[in-house]
Image (cartoon, rainbow, N blue to C red; front, side, top):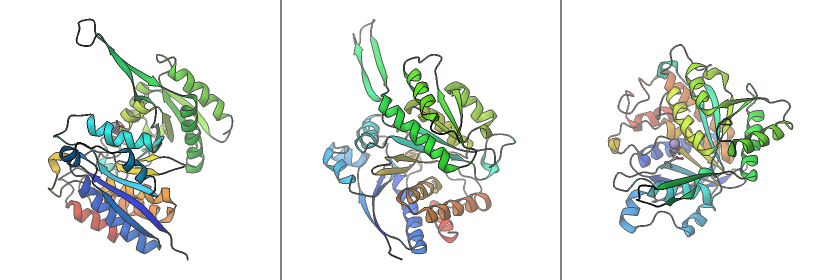
Length: 353
Ligand code: IPM
Ligand code: MN
């Protein structure tokens, strides 16, 4: 068997990012031995520390450099010493945009009912995926102040939705639903009753594209109702497609019903280019260096990365190992309450691979 040699860019980032990334890399290494593929990892120091020292977030040249990799593995961006927004926009969003990672894929899967805050819900009830548009919407950063600082000040923040951007996202979601082959149900999550420009476009494109997927059942839910169903009837969902800001909001709720930030992973996907995988929990500065942060979210992100580069078997094995650890060994998925250190959890996954 010809073994492949992938190039993986690693950005540990801030806070607990480097610690959880180290465990993800441990699992990647074990998976490569077991499944017979090679890879080279290259570490990058983009993040809050470097920004404080040099004033640099991530440069255009550095972004060009990232395009040469097969995938990017990211820990977390966010530093208590840097004003909110600078690193998020200057590194995370800039990378998503520059690499045209137009899908943010967030699986919401409960591995152990003991970790679910919802009464009477188990792993069969909570197993869906949110396909979040990742390149447009409010995140585009369009808008202006009028009369800034005056009593009659106006702040305008625009939701920017292109036909092309909406269509490629919706098309990806239909393809993904078909390929996932579970309940083959795709729910459009929006706000057609109030946001009558943006969501008119989304609804029209959705109705048009769905004609090409007669095997996929479709549904619509307003975003506010979606948050209600996440709590009341999460079993109704299979795949959800939504815009950038709604996807941001509902996936934090999704993370909570799947057991918390300790287990929630996501992928910033460019289906034709380089994708970036991350635990979605942030840099959790108060736990830095304490060896208590849960690395499973980062390990799940590494699993998604494997699936993305074409190592599906290895990806499945990583997920199975995580399921096993989460359902038989961990006392909790929360930092400091796992019954194990960060490193021990990484080791347990490797042993169960
Ligand atoms: C996420 C995060 C980011 C977002 C922040 C850090 C800019 O919350 O990945 O969901 O809003 O997209
Ligand atoms: Mn978020």
